[in-house]
Image 1 (cartoon, rainbow, N blue to C red):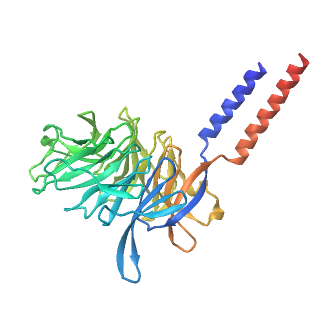
Image 2 (image 1 turned 180 degrees about the horizontal axis):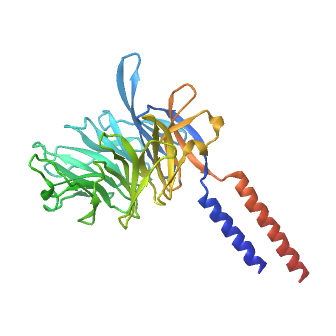
Image 3 (image 1 turned 135 degrees about the vertical axis):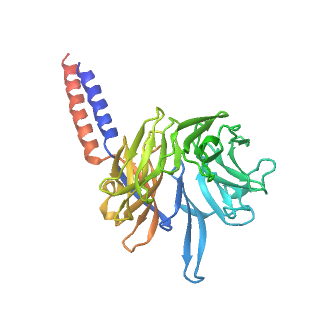
Length: 373
């Protein structure tokens, strides 16, 4: 009976630790700007894509930097051109784009110091990756000389699949792809076009195994951003009529919509979701981006409450989260400089001490009973 009690105590203790918001250690990796796009790999590798003002040249300089294994690596395209990183796979391959967004851009991949262009479908002359997953699938669009846009899934096996609805939808824009290969985006049916050429009833759509699936109305013109293998979709925010953001959202596989607000904030944006359903993003106060947020089970927590205040950092925006619950974020130091940081969950010392202390007492009682038998 006592052995069962020990096991139950361990189970309850571990469950309580898992449910409690974790504390996070902070590793400062390097400098960026407030608008840097961050992506995060399974082993804590971070790719930052941003621009910095060169005070000497008086011009903005684009940078794409890989932070991994304690070092920084500047990324460039196959011809040495500017590389705009979008995603990183678990094997360290970085997917992105070379060139301008409109006209002349090419999707590319950088891996182990070598950059190469990714194949385009026949008839296409430019393309742009918008998202990727842990296994090296990438999604985006290509264009031809006539300006026609076609959404494309580049498979981890080198395949190139055009996401054609066969006339079911007037258009579809893809933004992300889950680890299970489901593409998320939005579009509209031909019937939704009004007399002015606009679409009144745009839909959130997913694509998998050759078929589109309607997930419901697009919320106030805000784009769905990410989808996990469980079919949970997050969007960056829900907008008021004046364009201000009020809250992020999560749509579960059963179609239920959950608004994700930030504690004490007027508005929020959600940037990423992992396989456990944890989401990250940021909150705004007084019209300004103020703090990074972690959502678990719909409850938002200010990430600054989960780090050591002695770090001297204010975490302002969480951009990505992996399945180890590590978070890629931007933080501001005491001098006002923006830093790229990696947040890693650590067990709370007092919680572990209580759990282990109680378990030790129970084990001693078991040993006494066994010795007396």
